[in-house]
Image (cartoon, rainbow, N blue to C red; front, side):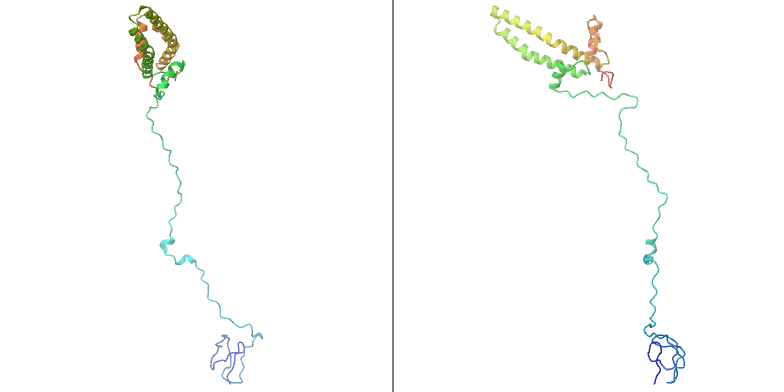
Amino acid sequence: MGAFCAFCGKPIVEGANFCVGCGKPVANVGSSNSTPTATPNGNVSNLFTEPAPPMNTQNTYSQVPQQIQQVPQYQNVQYVQPAPVMQSQTVNAGSPAPYVPNEITLFGLIFNYFFGGFGGRCRVLELWLTAFLILFLEILFIGVPCGAAFYYFRTNPQIMQYVQLTVYTINIVMTVVNFLPGIMITTRRLHDLDFSGWWQLFFYVPILGQLFMIYVIFFPGSDGHNRFG
């Protein structure tokens, strides 16, 4: 009759020094009446279990190729904020900014002529357009009716007297109406030349006043801003 392991109870192969079940050493194996020198601990339930396989303590990403692990490290890199984009300036630093006049319109010419006031500036083009516009309106609404009246009533002396009186009255009214607007637009024209509005009194000086008037009418004003705008 074969021997059994005192620890796990499994049969012991004859001639073996260790139990194939639990791996405990056995002694005097081979005879039926031989007893092992090792003594059990009395608790058969506390059987020896096979040790668990060693855990992989290496990094999970250790199998990643070396070229992937070697990520380049950029150190001492400072972010430099780009310089703001400068707008191109066509005007030199020492020259004044160009003067931009208001947009010229038909209604604007009439309104500025009668209600423009004494402030601001008047360019040469605005002066000439205003003069032609006022002249055109006077011819259309006054000159044409008066000319037609002279033509149709030229043979009637009594009616011609009334026509002439009407024409004189219209001329006086137009002179009064254009007096203050003429002073205002002349003042603004002098402002464009960087002159005070009082310089229009110089127009009444013989010869020199007429030369100065030609200069005011034909010559352009300041390119940049002046003290009047």
